[in-house]
Image (cartoon, rainbow, N blue to C red; front, side):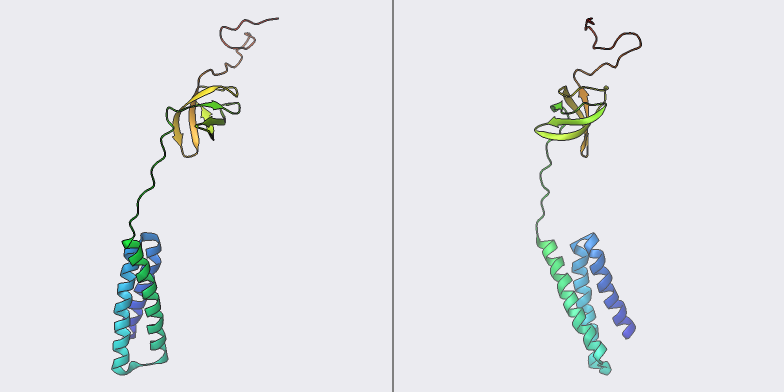
Length: 164
């Protein structure tokens, strides 16, 4: 009889702990199993197996079962709604706050984001367009990317005359 009581009480404990990961259904199950365990412990007491340990287990079982049962009831009766998803940043325009070489900071819709320019380095102040957002990092296309100096051309942007 004590083995059955131990299995029932162990099931209550296991269901309650796993319920914190799996959700309120297991908390409700733990409360129900706790009621069965309490009935079994009362049956054991009526059968003459009354001992201080039995009454202690019954008290602990009733308190634990009531607690997880309430958790399960509240979790199952509360309507949960998902918060609205923020609008996608893909296609949004912004400006480079720091030089994108190719990583840096851009401001899009009034917020600063870590970004990577996919078409090469760009100076601060360059207009950018968001291609993709991945977590807290954006991939952007710089409208006027800097052209790194080539061998023997003295640098500068295409079409610029070199003075001097």
